[in-house]
Image (cartoon, rainbow, N blue to C red; front, side, top):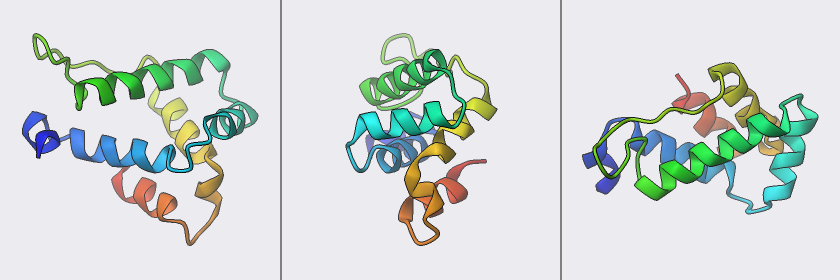
Length: 103
């Protein structure tokens, strides 16, 4: 309920990040992103954005209600999402979530 009350982007962002980290093997998804050509700095920026989103339960700060955005391009963000090994599995729920929710 909280996600829906904060902003319209919150529920899909939450679902995307839950799907991305569903296996809880953080090194595996990081290594996959780096192997896909994403820089270590950009991956860290992605993780910082995810952490901020989880912390605020939205992409708005809990104080002042200011929106924050990732410090990476949308192409890099999508490359990270697609680098997850689950994306290669046509039957994985992860692929369906990303394809459905990413604009």
